[in-house]
Image (cartoon, rainbow, N blue to C red; front, side):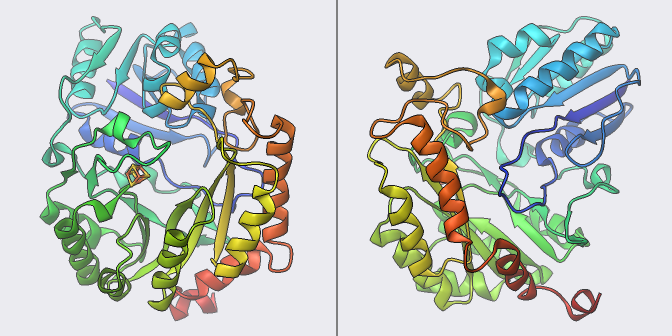
Amino acid sequence: MRIKLVYPAWPRLRQQTPFILPPLGLAVAAALTPSGHEVSLADENALPLDLDDRPDLVGIGAMLTCQLARAFEIADHYRARGVPVVMGGVSATCAAEEARRHADAVVLGEAEGVWPEALADAAGGRLKPVYRRKKFASGREIPSPRRDLLAGKEYSYRGLRMVDLVETARGCGLGCFPCVVGGFSGTGFRPRDLQAVAREISAIPNDRLYIVDNALQQDEAHERAVFAALKAAGKRWVGHCVSATPELARLAADCGCWYVYQAVITPNEDFARKVRIFHEHGIGVEATVLLGVDSHGPDIFRRMVDYLLDLEVEIAEFTVQTPFPGTALFDDIKRSGRLLHQDWRRYNAEQAVFRPARMTPEQLSEGCQWAWREFYRDDPQRARMARLLRRVLPAREKAG
Ligand code: SF4
């Protein structure tokens, strides 16, 4: 079959740094596709989508809730042309009933094992409405993604190719509020075959990687092994949830850690301690800030911006707490009558879609925008990004 994998466009945060990341999940689905099929991958965020074609099957991956409306439009379009559509991804799983109304089949949860089954059924004209694994795939079943299908697409910032994504494990048992990783990928830690990961990392031509594991720090032996593979490959990399101990921060820096994402909900000493440790080892910090939890009143915006400026984090990204469908937070807020609407396009963490406990939705949305402006007022995002980039650019790219 000629299989077209589609990653729908999604509305980015207005103030977010303007580079996009390649869709790793679909590149993994392509790698899971049995030989004999012809696979292409269209990322609508990188290139305009050709909707005039007629593949034998369309697979749509929807990771973000704010992608769902566009995913449904694309699915409806192809089905109207007689092309069967299979939909999957985190947000399609979380909004499974709605996804089923727009697709011939929905893959719930991870694709390993069930995507090949859906393709075999599609080839035989007997697609089932739902595919779901009974147990999570072992780490060894997770393949290296088909990066060749991402070639030629625009994943750069100011003309510079940014990061290639690498996944070394799935699952997280740490249970932070309001993370969805445990719900989608399970609470058990599932490392990939580390020799395969090391080979994969070495084979990537790009010098800059993004280790997308949600929580490297949950298994120290694994974390050390990943650091060793990165050091052997001589890459620079970004990641999140790296152990913030002096020894592991030193090891992370020694194997090329460039900057880390650190989530923060309320100013607190533990976050400040981690930032200090990373900075002492030359590792930058991008604070990913969640605003609008029930303990936040209208003073949170000023307090948070002052706190982050005092800590001298390199970059900050301010988001509005969003109750994504399929999460406990969504159920709680809906049950308490605080949900404002279910227009998924507006679930992009930029505006309040629920009534916060201690301020109005308008105060929350406007406060979040104010925080972006205020944090970057005296030191614009572009200048901060340029300084971060200078840390990792080889001389030939700086000159270019
Ligand atoms: S450590 Fe990261 S992945 Fe794990 S629960 Fe917390 S936020 Fe989610």
